Amino acid sequence: MISRITQSQVQPKTLKQNQQNNNKSSNPSFKGPVEMGTQVLNYLNTSPAVGACFVDFFSMVLPRTLVDFSRSADAGMETGFRESSGTINHAAAGVVGLGAGYLVSSAFNKSNGVKAHLLFANNETIDKLGSIVEAGKVNGKYDAKAYWTNFFNSIEGYNTTDGKNAWKTIDANTVEKLSDVMTKVPENTYKTPKATMAEALELVTGETGAGSTFRFKGTNIEGSAENLIDNAYAMRKTVVDRLAKINKDLKQGEVPKAVIEDLGELLKGIKNKKVATVVAGLAVPVGVGMSVQPLNRYLTKKRTGSDGFVGVEGREPDKTFGFKVLKTVLGLGIGSAMIATILKNPKELYTNIGSAGKEILSKLQYKGPVPTMNQFKFIYGMTIMSRIFAARDKNETRESVIKDTLGFANWLILGGFVSKLAAKAFDKNIVNYEKAEGKGLWDYITKSVEKTHEEILYPALKKLNISAMENGKKLPFRKLVGKVKEAAAQNTPNAEVAQKALSQLKYKNYAQLLGYVYSGVVLGWGIPKLNIAITKAVEGKKTAKADSASEKMKVAQNPVAQPLEPASKTFSAFGAYLN
Image (cartoon, rainbow, N blue to C red):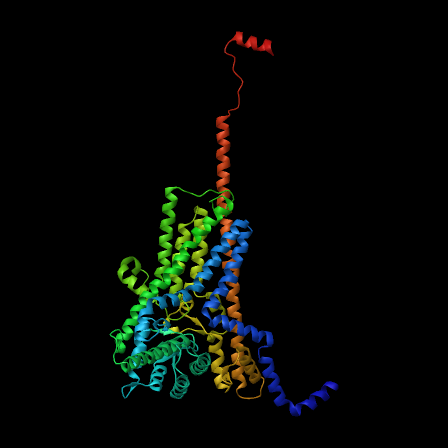
């Protein structure tokens, strides 16, 4: 009876309440800690250097070190030093590149009034931006508004839905807004101001649904939206500084010959410095990377008095010629194969080394203050080569090959395939993948790109008419998620948009976390455990074989005395008498 009365009383006002309840029940649970966790995951996802170091340390360095401490303290210390130094070396490569660029460009900068080392662009990007600068001339002057309008009209972002509609352009209204945003900033720095970049990225990503992958139309020149905007900003500042230098010298009555008046010649000079910056900038991290394991080996010997592989107690190093040949061939083969992945056609490294060398040098150029994946491949490949060269016996060689090649493939070739596959299983639209590019699992793993949290959130913010900026500053990511959560709970047509965004953010979190767990469990813990098991099995067979050979040797050296056969009746009688 009570239930009937309650039901009848509720019915007249249920429609609106039911809709609200349905919204709440279908809305993923995004409470304070979850929103904060989403912000952290977004930061790791959109900050390549920090994200890579975080994953490397917590899912590789730490577990591998702990596993090897179970062998012995010396093994753990050596592993910890080797793995952590690799992480630090990779992270520092960008800073070293900046320093190298400054030293290489110092005289050029002073002569021409620019800061070429702060233009983090490769030669192709410099040429493209140079053409945009020239196209933006108005009445013989380099007009800022025309420059930025041409720039945003020339780029497109990668964003797929159901495997289609890959490259999205920016519409005219948004281009106009972006040009206004970029031209209102004082041109007194080579780095785009933080608030300006945040406002620009909100417009760009909200419009296209893309942020991590952009390109200039009709070219293969790619980069993140932030990277391309930063390069364009630095190029504009370069032109402004160059003109200021020329005007200053003209007022003084002369223009030094070193001052390049033609933009093409100026950019040519900058590009020459970029090649030298690559050589100088990568020489340090490569040199450090190749020195770590020999140094590690030396420190272990000083600490223990033994130069043997720490994974097997009491082992002496293998100094045979055959082993030296083996590890040299393996090191060169594996290291060069890793470096060859930089090339469009890896086989070219072995068939046309001159052409391959030029392509590698071009692809190793800096595109920003954060090292590129190609730079990581080169540094990592050379480091692993040196680790194999420094191996003390076949056990260490085998362990290094298994551990390092799998780590290289997972990080730099397969690109976090576990999180990609997980994302596909949860919601295929949180992964960018154009079906026309290929079919099958391998194509999906190697050609797909996971969407970032911002690429999921910003288009929803635009549809919900929610601004990511407040009082000239970008709102924290967790607060933006909170605003979308509020919209999802409202009884409005846009509630579905908000709910979909929250659902995709949730699945994005799950996929990213599964990738971290995989790296830690399989690469950080599983592979070292496998190495230990294989080494124990190999050593066990050697010990058993050695014990068997030793036993045979003892038998051969100490034959069991057999009773003498009597040679004559006299001897037999004498023996009987003695007994």
